[in-house]
Length: 567
Image 1: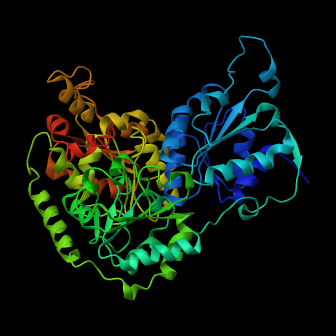
Image 2 (image 1 turned 90 degrees about the vertical axis):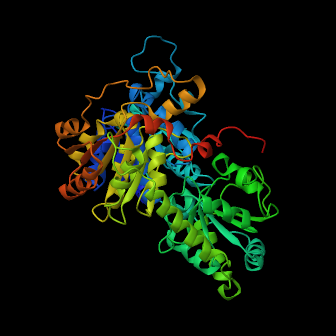
């Protein structure tokens, strides 16, 4: 049976569980979009291709399935470049499908061709794979290779170029193969390595589970929680893995928090899962790791064998997919031989006390609202199962420090620090969870303005994301850095658009729900009304710009991420 190339591409992606397509349908892709809708796909047209790629990223983080974004030849593909770089740094296996003129153009020496550039060269550094469909019969092998590369080892983005001459091309092929036939879909660790890891765990007096964002992106929370229960150990959140495993809120402590640093010092064994051991963790050797039991053992669950031993020595590398390795550990671990550290109850009490003290220190009244109070009031009435999306600098850090729920999922660009991802991430996440959970974006105003037009996308697709935006009318964290380096004068980072900006009215213009708040006591009721509206919503809160620039919690810790600092 002969089918069009675009139909075959859709069939191949369906075999991988993908049924959502992001992109702006130009003539190069109209047939693909029509066919996708006819096959029951969700087709999402953003206002900017870069935002569409971030939506695909948000969908991946909540489903573990790669997102697919198309870009039309020339400018549409160019708009994807920044998102491709971000996906590479964030280890996101987005499938970028790039439109292009007919393949004959690639060999012509004529100049002045409209909307034509040699596009792959612009993406080579970011992509794990680049494939160009020159002939219809190549479709299967190129799409298969794209998924194989995207999902093997450390995940990452791939690029498929789809020239216009493929628009009417047909291919005669057998039914699409399931993924397990053409690529490695399961990868457990060596049995001898598992045995050595179990020995270290059962011998440890103070084992610690270091959990990163990869656990949540893999949707492996339940199995990792089972491992933590069997180990009876404290759990350290990496800066990127700011969510909590189900039922283990009291035993979870942020890395670099006061109690977290005590646990690091006391640990004689670290089991790291779903995380790079990079700068935000001081390579596992510097800063907090340089105190206490510095001879502690390390077990590292990691998909990329080339990552083992680079940043620090690893005693037991468990190379493979954590979704396969964690069940191996659980099955082999004798929970009767594991004992909770005697300090665990004291650490739990100390962490609870610290949270209470931190809350008590937050100014109750201020005009404009203090950013710490903003974070408290914005989060205290959220559903317990809300998906939290963070964007921005200072506001994001305040939210992490003062948020009043223990979120089950947190999305933000910790590896790259990319701004403007928040609203697209929230849209992708809401597509993933449907009407089973609410998605709440907490953002600064500078970041929110990057892709504010995507409010219309949320309205059009009836996605009830709630955006709570702290407005200091400045680039808050940049103000902090600038003042530290150059003194009180901070040109172009402060008051760069004036306090007349009304995001709530912009939201209403898009057809969303909007509220403006400038008193602390009004924030939580406004958030409740936004949630109750069951519409895309924006709650704009005027916050204290000076406090946002000069009182960033844990700024010294954030600054320590830059440079090797002697380790």
